[in-house]
Image (cartoon, rainbow, N blue to C red; front, top):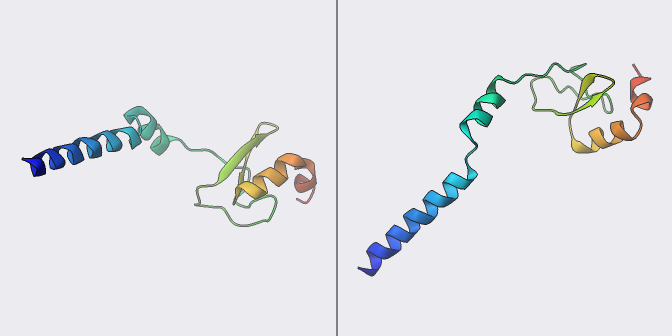
Length: 87
């Protein structure tokens, strides 16, 4: 009897945990269909190729810039003109 209770508690806990970590269906499907056009396939800070990579992005002057890392994104946001002038 104790084994059955343990199994049931484990199943309930697993069920609760998995339901908490799943994304809502609307959000999950929106991620699949959402597409953002980046200004360039290269990170404007380090010039790393980000084409086909899940890039970190920011909006600047109405355009979306992609970055290889949060550090490059932070550098860009501190002084965007410094990196845009390199082009």
